[in-house]
Image (cartoon, rainbow, N blue to C red):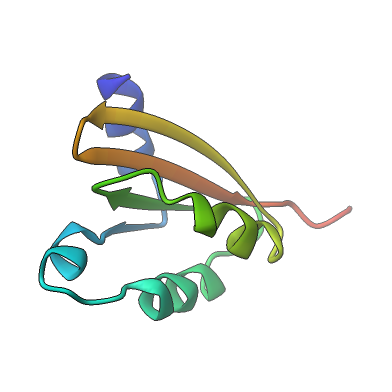
Length: 88
């Protein structure tokens, strides 16, 4: 699982670690959505969170993203969101 998460981070167009935002009482949703907007079809956005970010699944799914999730540690969840390819 850890190797998979490391590979996702290395291959992603954008990696956002939202743990510091949440630890300071912030809400990273807008930053995540702004980053997602920049991802091209076939590209990936990796989110690192202290818990499984279930609400993002529907929010980004509505924008054409699929997701894969691994729990690296009790306080580290890595989610790879991939934007669907355009029909070609």
